[in-house]
Image (tube, rainbow, N blue to C red):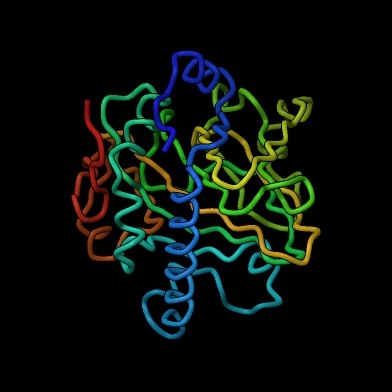
Length: 268
């Protein structure tokens, strides 16, 4: 795993709000990530109907627009030992923390994102405003399990938007331009596509505007992702994926440090 971050890569990430690292996984690691993710997703989809896991999976009406943007399975590490082993790897935490410029990193949540054949585009959005903490140093990793191309819906970014973003956001809906109603000053920014071969990783700041094109192929485009929270982050009042019991116990400003919910995977 290519997790040693250079000073040049950290500088690029801080400037643009994203960076792609090709060859992040070697061939054997890629095969493991594919097999583990596929198995975990299949188990989740089989078990999610009618139980608590339904809240962690976006599958419902197959004709719903969002269901055709991607199949989303959240917190697979909670239910699959293999995913947990991958996600708790301290090397991932160190790479994320080095890029973000923080001294410690916790997992917010992992999620598999699978854009179905001929799936809808993913509208421009920000990540961090969805989450239960607010941090200009939040960061996500997006690992391509298939080649991500212009044809099948690779990632796109608006470079530098993390520097001027507020915590205002929009949902991922039908209209690609909804985010520009909130941030009209971004309309003139030239979007950057990030096609990458399978086994690559793309890191992006939680306040960097990003989206993905439609999948114009008859094959799915698979990715395994994880959102990271800087150690010491505090509760902002949003539930997001917090269990109801934990959510009810929190006050705004409380440190989010439950080792089961937000495990610390690397600290300087």
